[in-house]
Image (cartoon, helix red, strand yellow):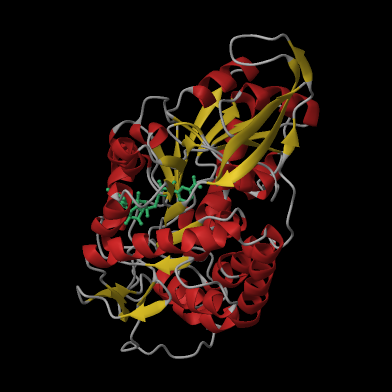
Length: 493
Ligand code: NAD
């Protein structure tokens, strides 16, 4: 067993909150951070008081005019500097990030860590987002003399952005919000997920060294919903950029209404994975197995709802069962481990409950289901066959290493099953001909559709249809998301 050797963690290390350029002690004490792999306490996170959350929002508001007026080239240069510093130092956070997320060492090193600096790097180059409208002649009217009407459309920052995020990829989720928000001239208050905020606090220490003015970047943490809820209710916050469950997304929309919050909502998913009668089943098997191996299915874009042509059904489930049987479930620090733990005991219980409900509803459990004999919060890779469209394991997001399989009788039926969902984040089509896959993909109600592949395009707009969210980010779409359009118009005679 080749266990990764990581720096020992200092359980007593003091973590603080960054508010208006000062690192401050949390007024409500600390709470324990538990390693899902060992169930040991690995650190103590700051518990911000509500008044500290409000102070952070006020600090971001105070910093806004100066940052907004800083030329975009300077803002982007600081993001590039932050990316350099993150890339230099992020390796030093491997043990901490692995410990608080429970992600396997391989996923920590290959996915969790490098994407953090990448998200900042994406916004190191300024872009001109201004547009001029084509002029057109207007007659004199009661509003003014006639002439040639023109307009210049510019993008203004939204203001103070609260970045509230989920636990699964803590650094990626936050940096994917902070970088485009800052590039656009907004200031931010970061509120990471309660389960794993420590490495993000360390990343903010690194970002701060890049030289952002005080108050431009703030971070507050807390063990429950209160800190996030306070930001959503704060009149100093103009926009909430949220990544998390659809249920909490609904609460945020409701609570944000009185102050007309701008919202970017990146919510839950239940990815459909359509396999046509002529598809390459082996490549689809590799993709579907990622539900088990990529952070134990704790990823919103996972292809968890498999819709396979009846003629290829047996081949698919046989191959999936064989793959599940060889995936090593075990110590997340073992480099041979493919399936690590899920985040908490509560979440493991939830996943187990879903599996039991599937079996009770008539699904056939071809593998998994049992609780591995390991100290952490593990769930074995689980394959549920013979599923029906209305089973909870098909309709609800499980967010664990569980795959549900249904049969279809042709492309129209496959599309109907794929669209029979409240979610629409990332779906997939596997077909022999890319043209056929495109044709099917366009009919699926999903913000993103992968064609014979799981890999997203880094600059393509990312976001969900239906209960999977509102808005898009990534690449240029990230800059659009964190801006308001303003038109300056005139009539020249
Ligand atoms: P969650 O909704 O439980 O929590 C997300 C964040 O919301 C946390 O920081 C939490 O403290 C905060 N929060 C909770 N109640 C709040 C309230 N009333 N007001 C303000 N903030 C509040 O989600 P989770 O369990 O951390 O993450 C899993 C979910 O995230 C899944 O549904 C997954 O699909 C989704 N997710 C979506 C994307 C995407 O890009 N669409 C990416 C990653 C995860």
